[in-house]
Length: 287
Image 1 (cartoon, helix red, strand yellow):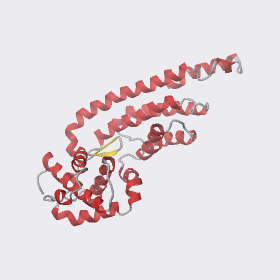
Image 2 (cartoon, one colour):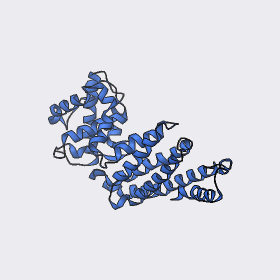
Image 3 (cartoon, one colour):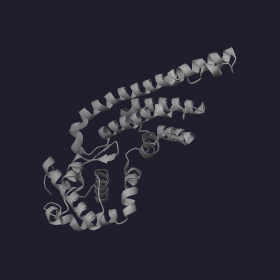
Image 4 (tube, one colour):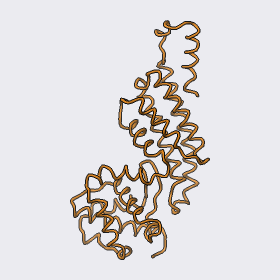
């Protein structure tokens, strides 16, 4: 096999991408960059760590799962090329074409699966942290896609489940503390039947939770090729921890300004109850 320079890695990815496009074109199937990333990652994992091509398909985990800049570059190179004779120039991977042909057939034989389920199975089968499937698809996607929250209790249950499954290594300690504190906050809000009321405010810090976590994922869970990016990515992760705290603090202030318990409702309580409630309302988001 050729040496693992950046140029040679690019050539290998180009040829695998070209082969994938050829097979998709034969079935009149299209391809977007998001799905190309997952498709070639799945091929990489099916090949296995001992395969000669494995290390030529470098990835790291990020916002939307495993990502490779090489795959992105190759996708944009070939997405408009429909001429089979132009893209089928397999000088490097020629000895693996039969194997890749079988894997690509397995990948795309069920069109609905390829478009609707592959990306979720990549998380189920390969995510480096147990919390990631629920965190991404049940917490982040809910906040990212829905202006209204319908199943508040299930969301809170998912938060607690993810909290228990966060990585135990020291690198994520500060993030885990932030996540845990935030989980306590929104659980209290939900107990007061105010989660729907303040959902529009809480969506942004919830989304920022996942995006910050993803910044740490790419530091900790990447192929060796990206080791030279560790220092920069680590700086970005730590900076995003600070930004995350500001998102949560801003949400706290906005909720406080809207008065969780309006003065019109305080007459229902005794003076001692009012004191307890005011203390709780003023402090629960700081816990």
